[in-house]
Image 1 (cartoon, rainbow, N blue to C red):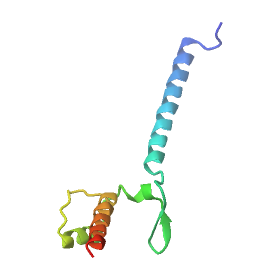
Image 2: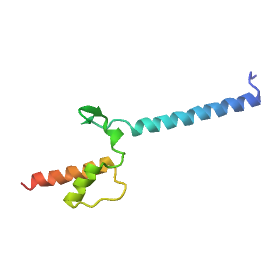
Image 3: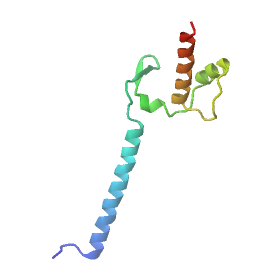
Image 4: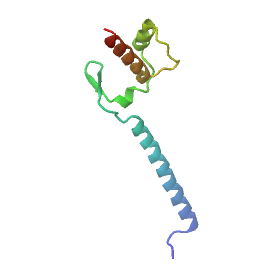
Length: 97
């Protein structure tokens, strides 16, 4: 014995599926922006979680450092990727001293 007719059951099922889909979207967004490790200080001491800035396009300053050092990079380089290349550059310079 059911208190919902077939049309109501279908509407409820569709509603639940929509909620699940939206929940998955929110979780994907949160996981993408989830801080990874320690936060970074930037913009006059403001703390920015690592996961937020890493996917943004590389800054002009980052690209200038890479260009000046002769390090090649792919078009559409992200801030996180540029940061890794620059960190590697400085690590190699420290080791060569």
